[in-house]
Image 1: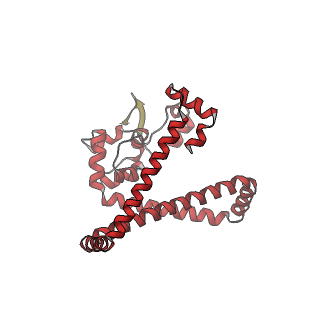
Image 2: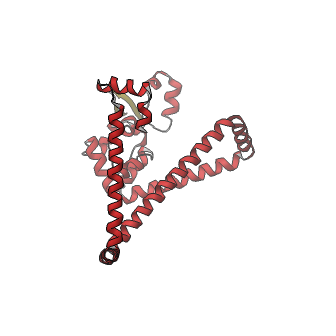
Image 3: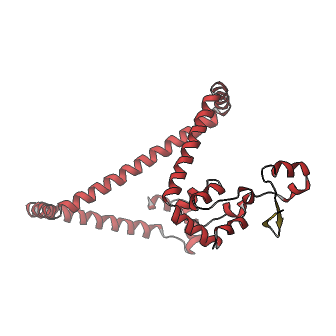
Length: 249
């Protein structure tokens, strides 16, 4: 291979530009032939050694296998599983590539078929979606109930809560913008703010109107105020320095 490359001017120019020397093709070919001759001699020596000591080598192999049978089988099993995993990964990638290609080639037809199917089975699809959401919500409530103490301690340490009443000073945007949480808390925090507080403080009576995160533009519209405070009674809530404060008449 090297001898064929030596005959091309482009290869000689690349070697010269990389190493700053002009390659001597005769020396390269000669060195390659010497290496090939050494390799052939080594292989011939190995064959002679094996033919001369075949029985002893086989006995040594059997003895080694009997001593390390479990380790050898475990290594073979791991090697097989690794090869199988690589093959399965390659097959999965091929299937994904085929699906992508098929989708790109038939994008418009697929979208039309999806639209027809949705229009035909709209109620059933929505029912399945609602059922799936309800099941997931029930799973999150069960998870919160089983880890209520740990979630409570974690949230109190993050917001520095010493008394349950301090939660009235935490807005929903602050609550849902937490980044560093445990895996359980990350899942549980998808639930409504008030429901989480009710679960981790079962004996506390919460005033839901004080936990609502209302934009400041609401106070400029009397209709919005009436609609918002319809169930509040005599409690008036307003923002003061971005904190919810309540006064009773």
